[in-house]
Image 1 (spheres, rainbow, N blue to C red):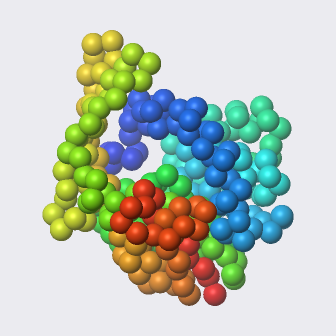
Image 2 (tube, rainbow, N blue to C red):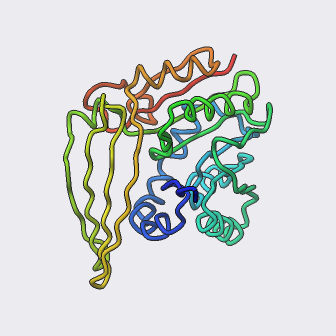
Length: 250
């Protein structure tokens, strides 16, 4: 029986929504957020940083520009090719590795790991999220920190919309979503309308509350985990658009 390809391994999905996910505004956000990110992680000037699920390299490039030694990991070949082109064009030395986030591990190689822009919770089995956290813990040096930026369950529940749409350069994107049983995540259906052609993509995204993500990091071996409402270290509450968790390795 042929194995069904998981949605996150579908190159067509990432290619189709590349303009939507990583438009110019997103790159400007990375340039703005790199400094507070480095401060929140207490990065020394020569720190080695793992950008897990780096996509086309927004944060990898910004952190490398600031002198950090960066390794970007992603499984989407299209995005890694773009990341390498951008780094070469700017004469930045960044290592980019193609790997599944559940499999990548490099023992005690990094001072910090970042996972940005809701790139966590792709898997139906929550044990896979735990595996990712364990591998990150193993890949960090003592005192290293793991930062996850995600859309928090508290904000999503308060502002839930079953559908919305937007226009981008003459194309239309329709997003439909349903709450999975027990509020474990969101079942998503995205439609992309281009020149009269309709393409449909379905995917599941596991969502975490602040306490759930904190407990996951602790179970994975992190000595402690702080929860914030933004990269500036703001308090996390029901009004916070972003959930930022920072686990520290003893």
